[in-house]
Image (cartoon, rainbow, N blue to C red; front, side, top):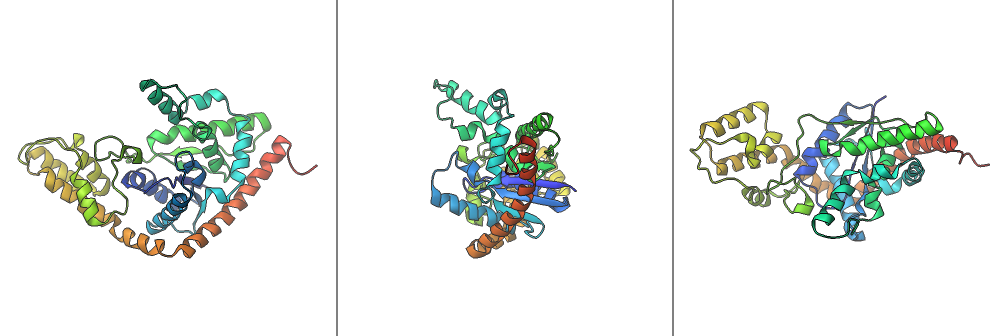
Length: 333
């Protein structure tokens, strides 16, 4: 039985980078897996979000977004991380077999240290323990439900590798107990560029919201950075931010056609941006309508999350029972 696990942090408004890099591949994986557990990682969000009301709103936004995009709550358990407290007990146990050096090498921590040093600050300034131990908690999310496959972008593979290493370390120490997971990387998914060419990220302020209204989206697409070549000048689609986003939404025939027009100098950036807007609307327009309907029915969203949490806790209790037996903390003396 193949089990897929994925999670979304409710730390802000979802954008196209979230959709293309994680959500769309995750939904496709759920459809072909025997079972799936998709969590809204609200405790992970606490590392950067310190507003209780916004956390609750973003949590419901994520739930409505996933359902609007086609997640079937009958097949996939959708739940809040905080509603499965077994996660945090397992993370504590995993900490006992986690080398500190592994956390020192984690990408997010290394990036924070590098940014501090580049700015002349102390290496750990602004680094909280939630950020430092983020990979351990993520490993808990995955291992608790016997996850086999975790859909991630190439830049997130390390987190799944750490979860696998921790499962192996635990099993070596206490006997075969935890199922080591593997990353599921869609070869067609690339790092999604934002309006300025950097990775699309809320922290860069260069995002296009997932369910932006058409006029807002048009204005944002118009801001995508391009060079000064005129419509009749040949262009390289491989270096164009507009084409890089367009190819994620277009069919193979559409990609080939536009790529040819770029190289032949028969398309300008204004037309290319209009094609990008149309392609996004074609894929996400109806989902945006469903999102707004779902978001207006909070009782339904809470019911879906509660049901998902019940199912996730069933799997979690079974795993944690094995873990407690293995380490000697259960059953009661």
